[in-house]
Amino acid sequence: MTLPMPDEWLPHHEPLRTTLVRTIGIAIVAGAVLASRWGGVGRWPIATLLMLWPSFGGHWLELWFLDGVRPRLSRRRSVQIAARLATWFAGGVVVAMGMLVTATTLVGRQPLPWSVWWVGGFAMIAVELTAHLALYLRRAPSFFDGRG
Image (tube, rainbow, N blue to C red):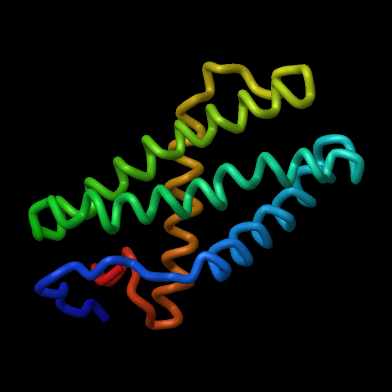
């Protein structure tokens, strides 16, 4: 069910504590998964730190789009969709590069070649679409209904 878009985009409001609990929780779980594939429990702290890039950074990327970019765009749904996907892709590339620099600095070796920058863009789109699907299924404003 697609609901009509609001006449005015309202700024997103969420307490910082809620944001931190959610994004750090995601980073801890994703860090555990990454550590299990990347050298065991000893890598969990570094893996968790790396996962803060997409969880915490992705949150701020989404806020930047919702409160900074979206209100300045045409209200046409096709324009909103294209801009959001482009924002997620570009932000995912930046997040991936941040993860790569952080991993190289902390671990002392490069886990992935620089040439796979585009993977971060598509990964961010996949993560955001999954998150917005969960919102949509809960009937909360989301990418899929045009309200979120």
